[in-house]
View 1 (tube, helix red, strand yellow):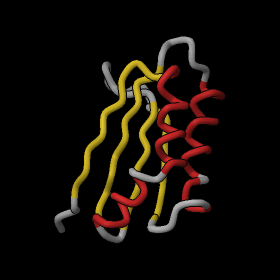
View 2 (tube, one colour):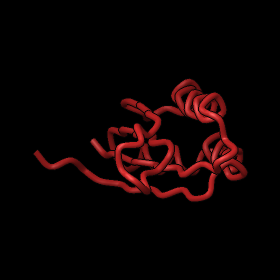
View 3 (spheres, helix red, strand yellow):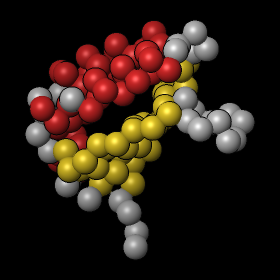
Length: 98
């Protein structure tokens, strides 16, 4: 299983309603793009200074599934949709070690 973490630092004018709407749009991706094993998201709890506003975790069965998603027109369009709301987006991919 491959994890793809996307951390978004939203602009200060973004409301929690807007941030939730963005996250829910990402949650719809498995309806249109095969290969997701799981998606989850959360809004920062504000415990540490400098934390990102929104975190999305995508879990894929294989690297090919991740590549298919990242290159899919719907995923690309959704990322362009969040650009105006985001100051900064950071991605991180890893394979869990147990």
